[in-house]
Amino acid sequence: MSNTAGSTDTTSLNVESLTVSLGERSYPIFVGDVGFSDPAKLAEGLAPYLKGNQVAIITNETIAPLYLQQVQSALGNRQVDVFQMPDGESYKSLDTYTQVMDFLLEKKHNRSTCLIALGGGVVGDLCGFVAATFQRGVDFIQIPTTLLSQVDSSVGGKTAVNHPAGKNMIGAFYQPLAVFADISVLETLPDREYAAGLAEVVKYGIIYDADFFAWLEANAPALVQREKYALTHIITRSCEVKAAVVSEDEREGGRRAILNYGHTFGHAIEKLLGYGRLLHGEAVSIGMVMAARLSVEFSGLALADSQRIEKLLQQLNLPVTLKGLELNAEAMIDAMGMDKKVVDGELRFVVADQMGSVRVASHVSVSALEKTLAEFC
Image (tube, rainbow, N blue to C red; front, top):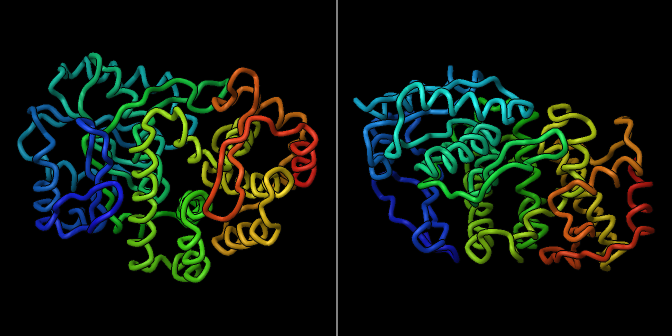
């Protein structure tokens, strides 16, 4: 296939593919049957990216029983060590980061090692940050096992752990060698986690591709039913959009900030409720509806488009309100004041002028913000 971000030949893997174009840090994303049903196929796919004999798999207690054996089988006779962490956002912490570092040193891994992130966004973010900092940087590969991680967090090189003061406050930009997104893993994903991943898919339609948003509206029932043709399309298109944006702006100096649509609100919600009460995608879903309402007030987004966003998210079984969550406007504003998107004391919001076109605004009036929050709190 061809796309704006580049392409990679994967005939032997029989999967869709695209490339995140970042010069010497470019890497492929493989989408489809990458080999969980056939370790020999997975071994063929992984082999070009394994330079040394040491591999460390970072996974969690939920994913390990399902897919760890397949990945281990694909790694052959290499030294393969497995770090299994508890499942949940609260474990994306400096404490877990230190435990992984201790583990790698205890197992005598060196600079030729390759880390493999086998799991969702928490595992991928933490593993990537470890890879960025262990012995000043080692190779790592993403094998995302949730929809959210396949369409968003495994692509783009943002790695981090959380701090009590804010989400993803400690991290680094560090790109993987490759991303392997096997659609078959989505069959075992709980309904709530699956829906949370769809929130990030909807985001790409809002920020970049109005036609894609319309496609999501037309195919919402198929998405809820996890039809394979629909999954292949949304994962590939989401990765194409993110790859194109990241290729333009790797370190979020400008355009990449549009990927944060809904996240200033969403991160504040996560912080106030405690990480884990809402899934990241659920908080982002509410945040995107809030951002749409703010856009109506601040940047002229048509009210009908704001309503379309809310309706689609509801059709995909996602939350769209803070009602019942015991949050207030003052607390939300305070929480957003610690968000990474604050520059020189000014809150930045990604606002939509129209469907498929957004921009970063740093002079949002307090009255517009308070009016938006009042509708939700």
